[in-house]
Length: 337
Image (cartoon, rainbow, N blue to C red; front, side, top):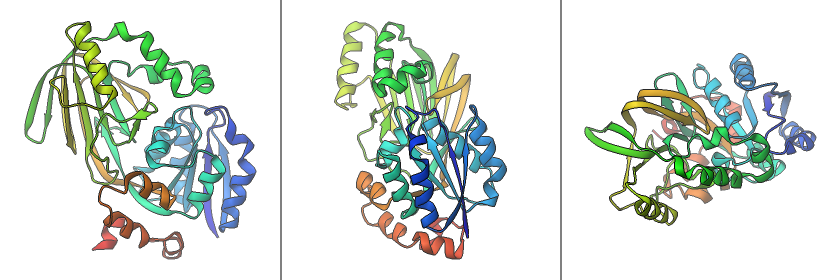
């Protein structure tokens, strides 16, 4: 019998997952899984549990906010065995869930995963020792994600982030940076930087207009130059609101690897959690590092995959039944060759 480890954060969002536990377990039991359920006890507990026990399971199922997903990914990345990961988003914002078009209701999401397909997803590596799933950010408002009170997040969802950001609008400052990528050097004062692999950041659409592809080994990078006065700030906010990022205040590009040097200590946020304060950072894209199990419609509807045919063909080649029957662990890309 296939074995599934279900790790969930009982306090994520409004704790709605606790009312759906039986139905979720029943769904996967009917799909032939022997299910082990583990409620996390504190921050970092989910990562510890998955790291210690993942090798004993055929599928890991994580439920909670983006922080819970980040813990699961950090636990799975170093393992020799590529254990698939399913994700049921129940947090207050759920950027990854929005990006992948996952169902909002936990039971619907569980059904999609149980009958879904496998997809290899890019992961970010920050300074060689920290992983992030969808965004590494610095500058204006980035502390909002991890300093907004949890009570407000649970009650108001992503609106809580917006309110907190507006409260801090007078705190915007510039950072003198040197950014290196693909043989190019960019210098200047920047108020905000986003290095992402997501359609959604803080509950809102990503600044980058071009289609975001989750398995291409590339980050979408958006840097916003420091406004010199209130008029420039107003112009930047107006342009960002309509995704008009072609003006002189914006620098956007795609890359698999970049280095950022700051003349002053710079605070970073990784997937909405504190990433520490650094002068120099090195950010690398780990192409297709994690194998997700998701609903087929979720992945194709949101992206159409920018490469309309190839991803769908690749996904179709690896059905859930085939995967668990053969228990192959080579990458989906290799299967095409």
